Image 1 (tube, helix red, strand yellow):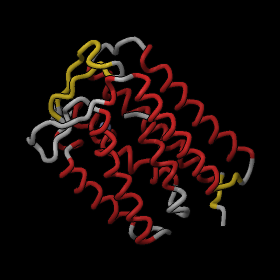
Image 2 (image 1 turned 180 degrees about the vertical axis):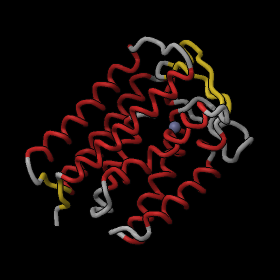
Image 3 (image 1 turned 90 degrees about the vertical axis):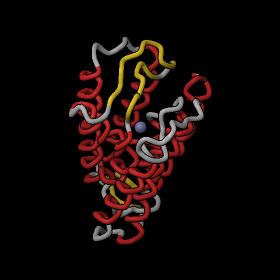
Image 4 (image 1 turned 90 degrees about the horizontal axis):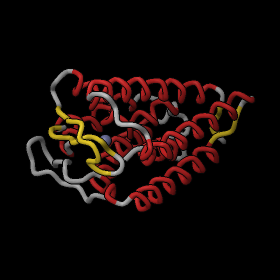
Length: 217
Ligand SMILES: [Zn+2]
């Protein structure tokens, strides 16, 4: 899943209005931030397989540390503990922990079987990805709802607060729409580097948006 994870981050603002948007977005993306790091480090393994499914040119052979439910529970607990002292307190911690865990649930629904309950467990996945329209409808609806919740929970302090938000929404929508048509990546290293750079840039973008928007009281 791609923009469905972002949708969760956007929506989170509704329930944790004083937590930085960058933090809220990182939570549901966390597994996909850990994943490229571990691929580049050679700890997790994936292969380029043309037409693995309409949305992915990868076969995720071995992603136990970033994408098993048990490890995602660990990451959720750690991330929640870090946010506990933040502005939204326990509520913020629960929101980010749910965000981290939502990644597993959403990937389990979309992926062809490669999602384990624990490292080494049997691979699971409902395979929504096999249907291009099904995937696009589900993810787009989630994204629209998430952005709507975010836009209602916050208001711009200035023009940047508006422009930066809608530019990010536009970029994510465009890159999602272009995904099934983009050329295959040259190597798994390129996939890892691109995923990591893109996500980190977007997270800083979210922090920047947060500085120019405020929670609606
Ligand atoms: Zn994932």
